[in-house]
Amino acid sequence: MTRQILALAGGVGGAKLALGLAGTLPHDALTVAVNTADDFEHLGLSICPDLDTVMYTLAGVANPETGWGRRDETWTVMEALGQIGGETWFRLGDKDLATHIERTRRLRGGESLSSVMRDLAARLGVKSAMVPMSDDRVRTMVTTDQGELAFQDWFVRLRCEPVVKSVRFAGADKAKAHPTLLDTADLGGIVVCPSNPFVSVAPILAVPGVQAALAKTRAPKIAVTPIVGGQAIKGPAAKMLAELGHDVSALGVARYYKEWVDGFMLDAQDASLARDIEALGLKVKVADTMMRNDADKRRVARDVLDFVDDLAVSGRHS
Ligand code: FO1
Image (cartoon, rainbow, N blue to C red):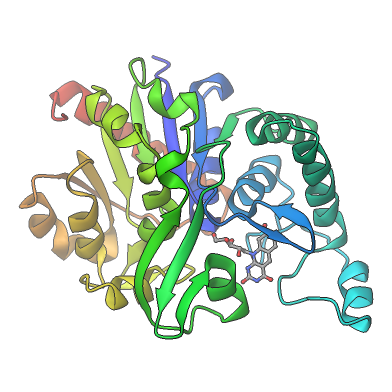
């Protein structure tokens, strides 16, 4: 049966599972709702890192080494910008810049972010629906031992080194959720991709109405662990778990999610944590969650969808 799947995704890890799901489901059965709180104005351009990472990944043009930006990129503009004293700490390749320039022009013309992204993604051949969590401005601000920092300043310019004390999402309380996140009645399943819980998933949940909409749907809600063997596959999730006082493990993430997910997919390396996570009231599926290539991404996606179906059949979800 073609169940409608809503995937919540942030950066690189989320984009990988989104690609696996897109390769497994009919393209009209998947919608990827993407975090926009990492977005920022830089060099006078509207930069949307997570939206672009998902778009490029689903289009098959993402840089395979970094996961972000485009493959087969050139850096002529960055070089020339550096020579005239411009800011080059946030690496924008020549082809990637076309996306930022055209998006900025259309946003300044009054077009909504979701409209621009729908068109840009379609032009790149993306078939599954991908939507921003909101068309309104939401910005992750990270309070650290060096004061409050805008997300990309902390993440890229300072390489996540400042110690994190707290995170807030400026503008979230006034943001209007994308309708897809509120219209959850007919969903067959909700998948929280292996993204950073604090700065990729939490901003989506912070948009008014989203938590309530996810709570009221009968669709099973499952989260795929972003932490394997106590490490994040990529990015600062493990460091943030530690600095924000959580257990640096899949169990720590499960505790963070337990109020609103029904199931948790645990990597085989952490099978010993299954009982502790079940004790939180969550169903657990143990699988190989590592996504090293496109076949892995589709395998993990199939395991996720089987898990959704198991929970739907067992009626084991809120
Ligand atoms: N991440 C980096 O660590 N260094 C960069 O120079 C960088 C540039 C960049 C350009 C476009 C883009 O879409 C993403 C970029 N990222 C870079 C990744 C980005 O900071 C993160 O992917 C998200 O904000 C967190 O998921």
